[in-house]
Image (cartoon, rainbow, N blue to C red; front, side, top):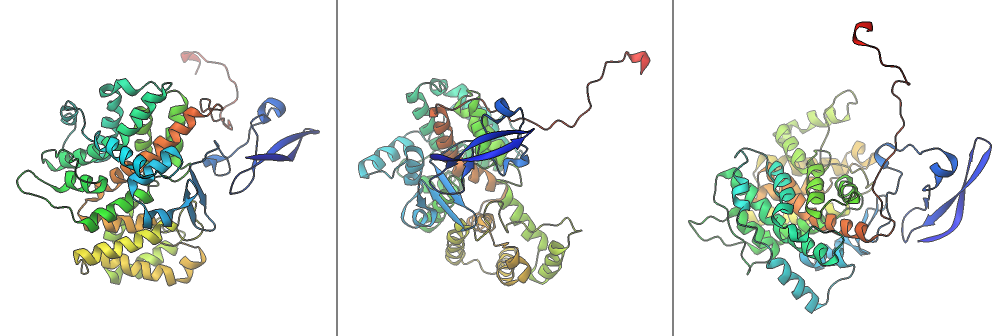
Length: 430
């Protein structure tokens, strides 16, 4: 992070020199850390769209070019040549593992996939019809009560153990939340299965008969995990960092991230997208909904198109579209009305002048929802799957923050526009 350039701020007849930091990639950043102390003013940036809250070596996004890198590696290369646990290692430790390192890491994760048996009873406190995300927020937060030997954030060994436990156990917890909502028995993890296959087995197998995981579906699932593993300083990642800045234990921080991810504008977008496709219903109704989307006075929004960061095609969507086509062909799903609407809507959006001009390309949520429904997941499980995918990114960001000597508790400031100072009036004087 190079320094040297400065920016000048003129305020109240005084000049203030602000350092300009140059990153490895991306725009320069004006350092305003001393601005309040020296000039007595704050900056105003709702949504933090122009504010860097930290420096990081983990993930980089170029929204104009449509690029996403994990530790410098383009997401397309990782999705094609790598697999999720190798990507986990990369995000956690900064480099791709050699063969021995990968075997050791995979073994450690595999050996931690079971959850404490008493956690089974914890699930029974929830209603059967509760949303799986509600269950996950509670159970992941409660991990600090079951694994209190790894909550000392000042101990690097405990931080490492907590990291492995979270990566290993969150899929088990997500699968348990799904099984609980169905009234089916919990399925224990199988050590001979790979990460994605194990998750599918825990979700779809039953004790009454054998279940064989289709390798193609496991590969599609693994890609979904990989493509969602991290995405820079988004809302949930920022929530994890903010919670972690207070010294909260890692399980509490990840539970906070899951709670934030639940929002329909964030992790719930793929669920909202599929629900929109069902609302449209049939191909012949698409023109009606496109007209509504273009009408500024109509609150209807097309979900699954465009992205807050990407002003070009979402690089994850290209990979996800390939997986969607493979899964639909494998399962022989061609006549499903919802999927027909999705295909036609995709075709129109890529050609329609309105969408092209505004660069409203189908994003990763558009395709991931199609894949997950085709595999057999209800929409209520889309966000929990996103949460388990993102867990490694949250942990990587949390670990980076804890190790940063500049780390301090997050404390955003505000532009106060409330009442001026006034004196209290007794009740009989009001």
